[in-house]
Each structure stands twice: as C-alpha cells, then as structure tokens.
Image 1: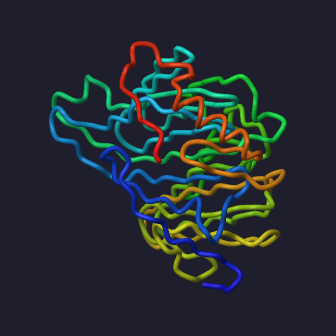
Image 2: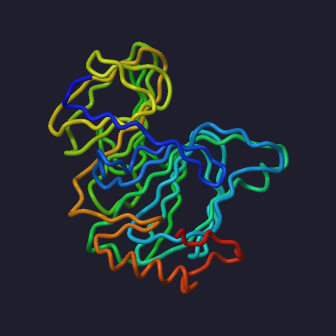
Length: 288
C-alpha cells in the first residue's frame, strides 16, 4: 500500500454487549470530513430474550447516524421520537445543545432471538450549529438514491457524491456511501471531496492494484483518484467531506469546539438536569 495512504487499525470494543470495531477517533487521525467517530457493529447473534440494550445516554455537538445491514433497532429519544430502524434505513439524530436517546433490539425480535450488523457514525456539527435545537429524522431505505450499473451499486447514505444526493439533512459538505461490487467489477473513486476514507466491510478488493485491508479505515490523500476493484463480491463504505472548521474535543458522548461546553454537559448530566426519554428510567451514568 502506498506511503501516501494512512491505514487505521480499529480498536475492539464492547458497547452494552454489542461487539464493535472503532477506527475513529484515533491518535493517527481525529476526523475525516465531519466524521469524528466510526463504529462497526460486528455481526452478532442474540439468543432468545436477549438483544442490544443501550440505555438512556446524552449527546451534544454532533449528529448520530445509524445504518444497518442486518437486524432492527428501536430508536427512542427525549424529543419523543419512537422509530423502528430497518436495514438500509438512515436514523439521523442531531443533538445540538442536548438530547438523550436509547437504542434497543425491538421486543418483537427478542422472543426468538435475532441478528445485528451495521454502522454508527458521529458527525461533528459546524461551530455555529453546536448549540442548535435537537432534531430527529428517519429516512427509509427506499428514499436513499442509488446507482446500479456494471456490477457496482452505490447507495448515498448521507451527503453527495457519484452524482447522487441523499435527503439526510447534513449541516456541512459530507460524503457517506455504501459501495457494493460484484466480483470483477471496478469503480473509480473521484476526488469530489477534500477528505475521504474507505472501509472494507466484507469480501476482497484492490485499490489501484494493492490489497485493500478489511476492517481498517484507509484515509485517502487529498486530490488523488483511485480505482477500486472487486476480487470477490464485496461491500465497503466511503466517508468524507470538507475539513472541520477547527479542532473538536470529545469526552464520552460529548463533542464540542469549546471545552467549557463539555464541562457544562457533564455537570448537567450528572445533576440529572437533562431532557429525558419518555417512559425511560434507566440511564448510563457519567464515567469517572
């Protein structure tokens, strides 16, 4: 792999019983475009009466985007949203000055057991939007634009690229697409956005005739174009966009350009001075 490409090996983590790989944030790279956090929820099988159960927790200064390949998630938040998220849907929550939410395996799937596989990313908000009113929107799979030709299917999850534009209401120039290639297919990766990174989820592929490492975030140099070639049927995502308008601090579930905003959020959550999710009592306490 070329010296101009940065390959980030993810950390293995466990989030409330869900195994994940987390390449962002990293000491090697703090952000790619607006993306400051990238979790790959690995394929997991839940036994009957078990499932994902991420209790009530807070956010500021970011948007979360959940995208599933398999399984279902029930999203509930302090705005009153109660949404079932299916494979291919986009669950988009902008925290702004403060929101709380829960994410669970739906009760309808718990009885017989279920599977889960997907991605969750965080996008830092522009400075002038960090204190905006929180909001939530759900975008069904059928509403996301796609192109499908010569063994290459591109689905634009958020932002713009490859002559596609997603309806997800991003707040800065963004690229987030799912790339599905049949064996032998090729795709030109243009330089439409100044910052970009590829993540191979499954299968085998080459990037300009060099093996693309699976489950590593490959940060591409600005202004360069590449050719992605499928050695087997494969699936990848590409993220990116315009650089952030300044550095961001991240502490637990909080993202901000000003450390004072994080200190205030920590104090508010600890004091239970925070919007709550209707019907929810359990919550994740502030880590020490």
